[in-house]
Length: 274
Image (cartoon, rainbow, N blue to C red; front, side):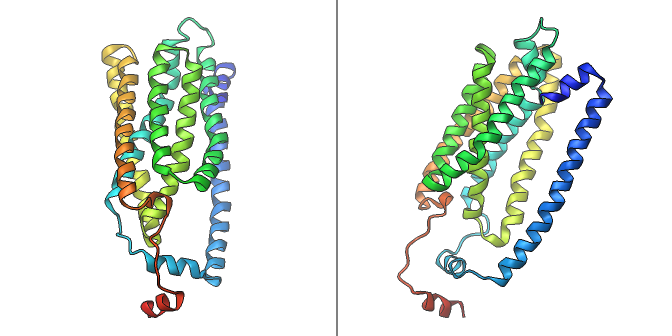
């Protein structure tokens, strides 16, 4: 977000695209390395079966895709899609609202977005640690939505620096909280399908929002309505987050992986499995 506009302005667009292609190639290499490690980890896991996993599978009989899972899907789709769509149009939005008369507007907008992604990259593992330690994912979800909503609204009416920080924190909380909760609400045999639904729903919204924003920009010659539309979508996630909070309480904090107590011993559970 920071270097691409600067490289394009100082050299040319082709050079910036080539730099981005190199970064993508490096990500592919990292992906291949990750796959190799993942295959090795699966082999080790098969060789060393853990009794606690077997006990947990006997204690809880989960539905394939419970109702709270689909609420999480909708929540993540709206919040993730809105934040990422804002990022895609951020240069135009920030330039129109704050850097209209600035000759280096694209570079300034790129610096602002670099702050957002820099904050999220630093805080995501921090929030992941806090969530693993203190649980309460449903409350963290509400906080992420509130920060995202305040960030987008404030972006248009106040100085953008604080708004960008709020959006970065919102994205970090969402990634640490929402994505990690999926493993607790669906069975491990459906994790691939579960995460596929999670990402495909986001991609579906990302195929609609940019087109809608472009059409609105053409008709109104301004990004104001588009920013407010994204803010409304994130406000809907605030309401969804509250609803998910009550659902989670009814399900004994299933988003945090809490399980019901049982009086059965491991030998009894093993006999039930047989």
